Each structure stands twice: as structure tokens, then as C-alpha cells.
Amino acid sequence: MKTASRIVGTASFLEGYIAQDCPVYGAERRGAPIQAYTRVSKNPILERGVIVHPDITIIADETLLDDHTANVFQGVYEGTITMINTHYPSAHVRERYGISGKIVTLDITDIVLTQIGKPVLSSVAAASACKLTGMVTKQSLKEAVAKELFSVDLPQEVVEKNVEAALICFERTPDIHIDHSEPIKDDNTFVKLEYSGPYLGTPSTYASGNTVLKKTGNWRLFKPVIDYERCSRCRACFIHCPHSCISLDTSGYPQINYENCKGCLICFCECPKKAITKEKEVREW
Image (cartoon, rainbow, N blue to C red):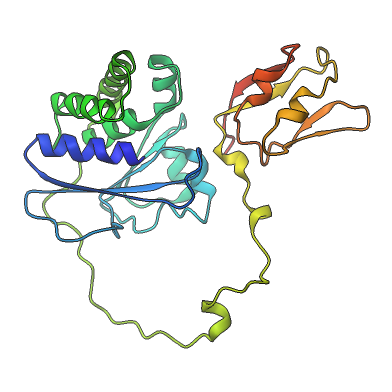
């Protein structure tokens, strides 16, 4: 998402706008949630950081919809366009979550798996955002994708595949644009903050952690599936799992904890009998 925000900013700059991109994230772990913000204007941009009321929100992973810590709908208002990476129709999403504003759904993961062969969403997420602004042409998007991906030393062939995927995504994104006439403005209401005591605002060394509440299985795109008829109980998957998500039952067969399996697929690669396959996740909600 950091790269996607840079592509949107660069494409907007190529169209003659002033642009600013700002990523916000914690632990740098592959698959962990990240937020990135891009501002585009005809005038100098003096504000920095989080966008309180976004005109466009791109949600690249539908599992974040149920993640209350991510709070992906924060600041969304009636004029916001929310694009969600999912195969479900927009009406289904609106009915389940009651989202304000306009909703666009598009399976951008399917596009990159078909065009690139890997679940890298930078170029396609940026393409949807550019299309929804109504301010960026396909030519500027194409140049921006190439510029940003070449800057991180990706090979020519990889960049070309990303450009192709981005242009396809641009075409498939619905022709819905934000209203540029009257942007939302924050009020200046002062809120009186009550005193809460030191234990609320001060971290405690002895406080219990929340690791067990974080179901990192939401990070997964593909899940490993064991064929027990072919499994020889060699324990290679059990030994190589870097996150201890595989245990052994009383008969010695491996069992996968899908709530925490991140889908690294090391078990899939290491299985000598090829008894482990990978399946794309399909969310039931």
C-alpha cells in the first residue's frame, strides 16, 4: 500500500497536480496491515499525516472489514467512495456493514494472479484509486507505475506485467468519481477531556498481552491443505513451520492451526511427498 500511494501521487503529479503521500505502519512484517494516505490538490498542501475524512478509500484485503483494530471505515462520510478488493457485489457489502457513501467492489487479486502470477497489489490498487479520482489518465498511470517500480530495481519483465495489470484494473474499475466541488471540512468544536488516571494512559510492565487475540490467519491469501492419504507422517512440515502453526495429533499426523497460519507455504514447499497443496481463500461473509 505504501507503493500504491506513491504511484497515485506520482500519477497525479504527472497530471500537473501537487501531490503528497504518507504511509503509516507499525511492525514491518509481510502481510501485516498498513495504511497509506495520498493527498492531491491544485494548491500547496500544508497538512500532513492521517486523512481524517477520505474522499476515496481503497481496502486491499477484505478480511480487514471485520478487524476492529484496523477500523478501515474511520472517517468515511456520505461522499466517500470505498473500493473493496473482493469478489462479492457491492450490494452485499453495503447490506452487511452499512457503509456510508458509494461502494465499489473489484477482485484485484484475481487480476494480478492472472497477469503477474503473484499476489502483489501495488499497481492495481493504485490504478483503482487513480480511476476513481477522475483526475488521472491511463498514460500518467502507466508512466507512474513504471517509474515507481523501476525505482525499487524490479526487472523490466516484472514492471511490464505490473503496467499491464494496472491498465486492466483501470478499465474494470467503475466510472464513479468523487465530487470535487465541496470538500468536507472539520468543525472546530472543542471537546472537554475528563481525567482518567495514570493506569489508563500509562503502559504497565505487568499488563497481559493481546497476542492471542490477533488471528494472523487473516493475513493469508493461500492456505496449505494436507492430503492425509498421501501423508507419510515424516514431520517435515511440523519442523519447518516458522510460526509453530502445525502440531501433531496422537497418531503423528500434522494438524494446521488456520486461525494463526499466515500462509507462508513453507510446509507446501518442504513436503517431500507433495501431500500438501495450496488453495486460494474464499471468504464466507
